[in-house]
Amino acid sequence: MTAALALEKASRVFGNGSGIVDVDLELSSGRIVALVGLNGAGKTTLMRVMLGMLRPQRGRALLNGHDLTTVPVAEWARVGHLVEYPLAYPELTARRNLELSARLRGIAQVSAAVDRAIAEFALEQYADRRVRALSLGNRQRVGVAAALQHDPSIIVLDEPTNALDPAGVIRLRESLLRRAGDGAAILVSSHHLDEVARIADRIVVMNAGRLIGDLAPDTPEIERAFFEAVRADDERATR
Image 1 (cartoon, helix red, strand yellow):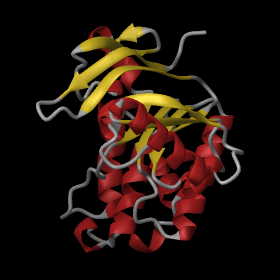
Image 2 (cartoon, rainbow, N blue to C red):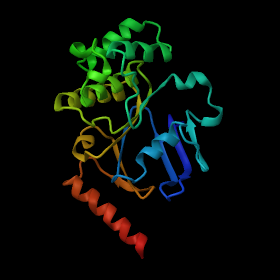
Image 3 (cartoon, one colour):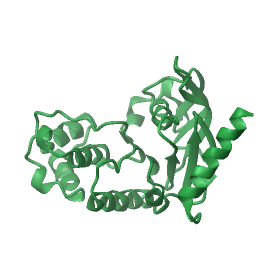
Image 4 (cartoon, rainbow, N blue to C red):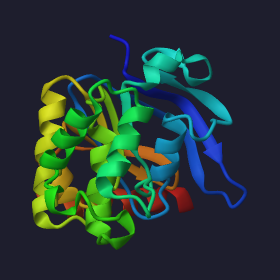
């Protein structure tokens, strides 16, 4: 079966030596992959290469079997993503931002889609406030809602629980599990191993720009296992 989104031996290294090296990763329909690593491990770069925001210097990125350089425009309508920061117009209301995002993604019934997104992420009391007046957590909710309101079949989220309160984390968790159940292929990066272990089918560990192995979601003391994997990899690199 063709992967929904994939990297094949992809490398993108910056002048300071950071980036990703020889990364192989596949996202499959109906599965949630969690990407975990320390700050600077390369998680955001990996996601940006996977989404075509950065071009790999070696290797390639594929969307439904198409190299990203030749992907039909219509294929991108199936992708939802939030990488680094929520994209929003601060002087516009949350509702207006969602409406604009819906139109950009070609949603036919804009008002209905926006209303569903507002309800899904409990934004009712904030919908008609300007985004600049919202807390960081509620701006994050708006960003996640915008990324998901067109019901994408491929979802890439970079640290989506950043600044979310517990209720927001639970809503996001339920949303991703439901969407995976409906067949979406999902990649989520996070520092919160206990949280991603609740939803992930696979947890991939990244260190120094490389994928160094997997952790089973039911691993006992998963944070300890993660730090041990990173420590062991660092030791191998210095030999």
